[in-house]
Structures are given as structure tokens and as C-alpha cells.
Image (cartoon, rainbow, N blue to C red):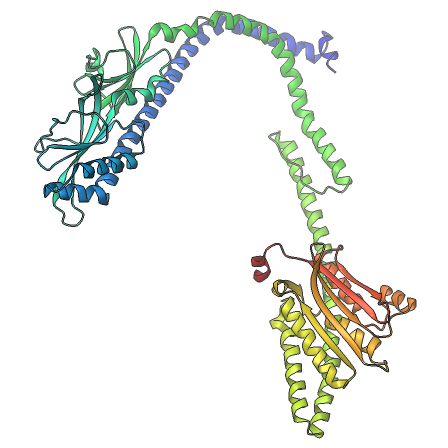
Length: 572
């Protein structure tokens, strides 16, 4: 197909389409130079404006974060119990040098060497300097309580081997005793101007970013203009946010109300216009690209029409292979969109029909198994009631009470308020109650044991798994024995699964018995039913196995999955 694209036949629609596109491109080029230059210039200004304002907003947000953090640190410091006690003792003139060192250490621990905090200072209620977080400071600094402002600009002198003046932005506020409410003093937290300028020093590129106050004095800068200088065009700033052209530069600004400052970005016009120089080269490149674009667009049009249909055909092939999933609809023409929707509607209807049939079949199997399970209870109840009547006639009071309580326990656990799942403990209690009843019916005929690991008793399982197996062991294995029989019931784990084992010393099963059990025609009632129920609820990898025991009797093993967490077991 790609080779045919370059074999032009003048009588084809493809050639006409290409020729018309080429002529249109030549006429369009005359207007392209002027219009593109204007649009490029306008869009460049908009992009620069958006970028500058976004940059100024970022700086404003970061500076606001600094100021908010300073306010929060001030609250944390003056509400600290050690600071409160120190200031209260200072008012009583009861502090030692060690107390001062301790409170300084506590302040340093609170701010944890926060990079944008230069120092924290505490002053008495009359403005006298008391203690500071920095190691070297001028002790004679005072504040005037009557004239203090929350935010102010000042200069700090660090005294050490080398004296250094540092311009800072300071936050000062009074603080009071938590217990009495009386004024304890003032706290001052300072941010060095160098930390403020670091916010934008790495983001300015070829532009100058700085901050001025309402008097047009430069309070923070990354280099140009100089610190404490005067911004010459400050009188042009009239709104909270805006831009203007002056002095060969584009100037963007944003008002920062907390400090009554303006954040200003100044871009030289030469830097701004530098991006337009490659415009002519770009226009020439565009002229060459238009010819290739005509071929590309014509191919894309054909591809756009046929691609959805090809994708639909490929998806229909997947459906034929059994992957019944709707096709993903992408933007396309209305007619193709309707075709896709109709196909997906058909898939949804067919999938629902399939799921309904599977659900109906599953419900049928569940109903059949439930009916099969219910056949156990009436026959067993009638026989037990007959035994109760006989015991009553014989005046066997103790045995009668024991039999009645076992029957009550059996039905209480087996009914379990209509729930299909019970715990392993409940399932073993059902088996124990059933065995107690059968021991009374068949006096001195057998003994039994029930064993279970303690941590397995809360595991869930479907109910009445063991009773049909135990019944099978009694009726078909132990009932006809001349000797005394036994039945051992165990619950443990094997290969990551929960395993029930029922073992008896009866007469065992013949090969014919095994074949009848597999076909479901056996008189060994319930064995096939249990296996089907397990696979219905837990999957084909679980179920029931039965084998003859060496020395006589049968061993029946039921395997079901273990839950992952005990909390999941209890929630079922």
C-alpha cells in the first residue's frame, strides 16, 4: 500500500486531492508568514504571562508557607512548658545560667534547625532581650512594646570571630502565661533575606525576580536590582496582579498582602523576542512539510474510516473463540458508532443469557443437593423418637434425658438458623451429638473419638459434611460386626487445606461398592452428595475420598480450603 501512494495517476481522485491540497498550501503560505508571526508573538506573550504569574504564585505560596510556619513555631515555642516556666521564673528574677542554656536548647530542639529560620529570641514584657537560639548575638537589642508590629524588616549583627550584618524579616508577638493569662514577654522569629531569595533564585532563568514594599524599596532580590534600592517603575503598579511594558522590559507583578509587598518579575525585551528569530526558518520548514502532510492526511482519512471496521472484525474473531467481551468504542463516525453499539448490545445480551443459564443450572444443582440433604433428617428423627418412646416405657430416665439432649443438640447445630456455613467446632458438635444418639440405639456396639486442633475450631465449612460419613460407617461397616467397633473423627491440616478424616474398623468396601459410589447408585447414602456439595462450593480441586483401611474398615477424607485470615473465618 505504501508503494501505491507514490504512483500518481492524473485520472484518480487521489491525484486531484493531492493537487488541490498543494495549490491551497501555496496560497496559504502568503498569509502564513504575517498571521503566524502575529499569532506567535501574541501566544508567546500569553505563555510568558502565564508562566511568570504561575512563577510569582509559586513564590507567593512558598513565602506564605514560611510565614505560616513561623507563626506555628511561635505558638509551639511559647506554649512549651519549659519556656513558660522559664519566663515565669525570669519575672521573679529566679533564673540561672543553666536555665538559660536549657531553654535555648529547648527552642533549638523545637525548630530543629529549620533552614529558613535564622533565630528565635525571647524578650521580657518591657522589651529587654533575654535569650536567643543562635550562639552569637548582640545582647543589647530591645523592642518597644508600644510600637511593635508582627512583621518587620531589620538587620541582625552576628558577633564572633567575624562580625556580620544580616538583613532579616522578623515576626514578633506577645505571649502570655497559660495558667494565669498574664503577659510573660515577647517572642521574635527571624527569617534571613537570603532564605527568601532562595525561593526564586533557582527559578528566574534570564529574568530578574525581586520583592518591593509599598514604598518601592527592594526588600529581597536574587541579585538585580540591588537590595534596599528603589524600583524605578513602582508607580506603574496599580492592581493586585498584572503586567506592563517599561524601560525595555516586560514586568509582571503580584501583590503579597501579608507583608504589603509586591513580588515582581522583570524580563528584558531582547530575551523575550529572541524566540521569534527562528520563525522564518520554521515557516520554510512548514512549507516543505505541507506537501508531505497532504499525502499523510489522505492516508489517515482512509485509515480512519477502515480502522474501526478492521478492529471490529478482529474482535468478532475473538468472540468466536469464546472471549465474550464488548469491543471498546473509540471516537468515530456516527454510523460506525451505531454499529459498535449494536454489536456490544448483542454481546451483553448473549453474555447475560449465558450467565442466566449457568446460574439456573447451578441453582438446580444446589436444589437437588439440598433436597438430598433433607432426606437424612426425617428418617433419623423417626427412629430416634421410637427409641425415646421405648426408653420411656422402660423407665430409663437417665438414658432418656441423655438421648433427648443429644437429639436437641444435633438439630440445634444442624439447623444453625438456616445458614449453609458453620464453624468446624459446630460441625464436630453435630457429629458428637449424632454419635451419642447412635451409641444409645446400638448399646455397647462401638466407641468413638473426636480430635481437632484448637486453632481450627473457628474455621468455616458447609454443614453436615461428617454426619452422612459417620452414618455410612455405622450402617455399612460397624452394625454387622461381631466385635466392638470404633469410629475416629479428626480435623487437621494438610498441604494448606483443612482435612476431616473419619476412620472405622468395619467390614470395608468391595470394588463393586466403590463403583456404585462413583456412579451415585450406591446404598452408601450421602457419600456422592457430600463430594458434589464440596466441589460446588469450593471448586473441583477439593472433595471427598474413601479407601479401605489395612486391617479392615474404611478411611474417608474430606478436604476443603483453609481461609487466609481468622477474621475472614469469623465474618462468614
